[in-house]
Image (cartoon, rainbow, N blue to C red; front, side, top):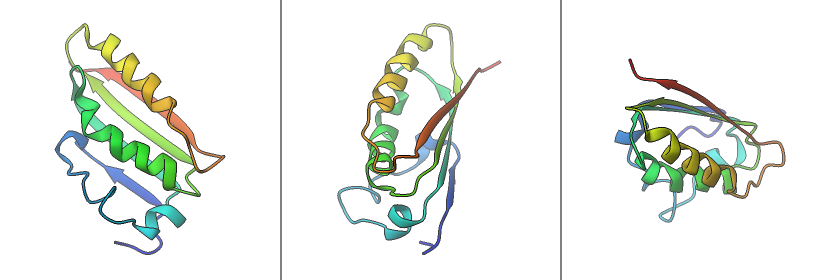
Length: 111
């Protein structure tokens, strides 16, 4: 925990354990200082965001000074785009405590 954390980068988010961030305790550094969150998700196949969505929702609802949430997604085989669109729509519908929070996506296909 860093008391002045402004940027959090999570690589290979599907292997990340989210439980520490929501429900158990609140991290003031995330609420009061986090301005940028970058999440890299490799190999999106279907509803791979199942574990990530609660964490992203927690941050959008609690990070008071969040300016940017950037999600980098590498999609898997053809057909996962429809599921990805559903996830994106759900994510964009989450309430935000920061009036300046912008959610951005960068999506590319695995080769």
